[in-house]
Each structure stands twice: as structure tokens, then as C-alpha cells.
Image: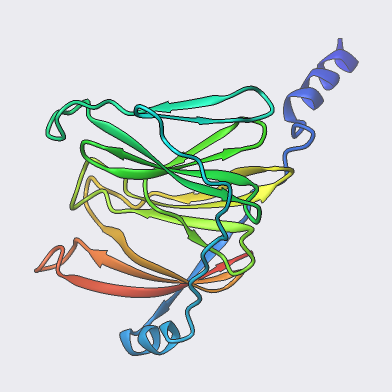
Length: 213
């Protein structure tokens, strides 16, 4: 029995093959002056977009290796909770995916559709790293509770985008929410945090540098 138990324990603890370890992100506090000075070197990177597709009768049809993917508007009144609209932004050879803007009754997000047909949907517009191999999104979920309260980092690995790190600041009790984020390099970001503690919740800010390890 003992060898069998050891074998079972080994299998349970074994990390699945092909699943690379997730990254770590460290925070270093900054003064407002240091943040503003560093922000002057921030990098704004936009992917090249090609492959124009036109929407036909409220439908966008995108070819993939697993067959066509269809995104169809729901053309009810815009104040109807079921209203939604898709806008094709183009194909990015740098990101190896199509970009589709997804507008809903209460929010606007983005869908990344790769050649295999896999979809990655995010709550906010992504901020891309200078080498376009990572993107970060922020979602402020205290001031507007429709959104989650989080910072999310995704990286391009083996032909797919994969979330490798996420931080969810406390909402109950409220602490802080991400207000602004900027890339300094492929492994460094600047973060502006809206604070919900103290005498004037939601009106003060703190600052930090994030380092991806």
C-alpha cells in the first residue's frame, strides 16, 4: 500500500505539463512628484491593425481555424439592459489576433480572438507593453460597482493570451481602486491608486511602481 500511496501523492502534487509558472509583481511606493516625473517617460504602444472587415446587417463574421466566429448586435434601445454592439477594430499581426470592441448597456470591453478561435474578453481597453507581448487592464469597482475591482496582467504564450497575474483590492471594506496605469518598460509600470480610506474617501491618490518578475 505504501508505494501506491506515494504514487498517488506524487500525481496529485505534480504541476500539469505545459503550464508555465505565473509571474510575480512587486509594488514600490512613489511620491506624487516621483510619479509625475517618471510618467514623462511612459510608453504608449498601439498595435498595427489590418484585415478590414465590414459588419453586415449587424453581424461580424471572422474566419478562424475552428470555423467562422459570429458577433451579432442586439439592436434594442440603448437604455435597454440587453443592448449590445460589436465593432470590428482589425487584425493585429503583432498580437496574432483580431480585436473586437464589445459595447454593452453598462460597459465597454474588448475581445481578442486568435486564429484558433479562442476568445479572451476583458472589461476595459488593454494597455500594451512596448514589445506587445503583454497587456494590462484596470477596472475600478468601488466607484462603479458594475465592474470588478482589479488589475490584470496577460502575456502571449504558445499562440494564446493568458492571464498570468491579477490583484483584487478590497471592496468590502473599501480600500483603493486602480485609477491610471502606464508602461515604463516591458517589465515596469506606474500605477495611480484612488484611495477610499481616510477622511475624504474617493478624493485622494497614492502612487506606486510595479515591477514584473
